[in-house]
Length: 114
Image (cartoon, rainbow, N blue to C red):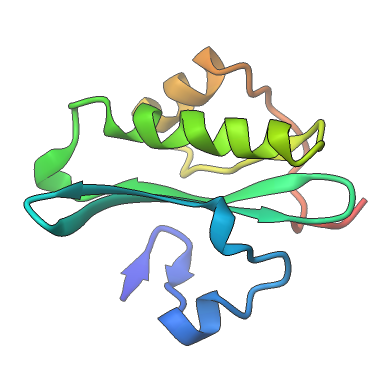
C-alpha cells in the first residue's frame, strides 16, 4: 500500500523498525475493527511518532488527537524529553493538531540521528 511517503511497511517489516516498542502503539477500535493507530518508536535521545492515522470514514471525530495524547503520555512516562513527528505539507489538519500540542517546525532528519 502506498501513502504520502511511499510504500507502507508490512507488519513484519514494521515491527523490525529500529526503536519499535509495542507499548508505543495506540489503537482506535470501532465495531471490533481498527479505525486508527498511532505508533511511537523509542530511540536513545528521543521518541518519534512513526505514524498517526485514521481511516477516511472515521475522520473529523477527534480520533487523531485521542490517539496522539496517550502517545505523548507514553513518551513522558519513558523519561524522554523529545517527541518528533512529520506530516505531509498539505495535511493542514495534522499540522494544526501538532501545533496545538506544542510541536514546532524543525529541520527534517532521520529518527534517532543527532
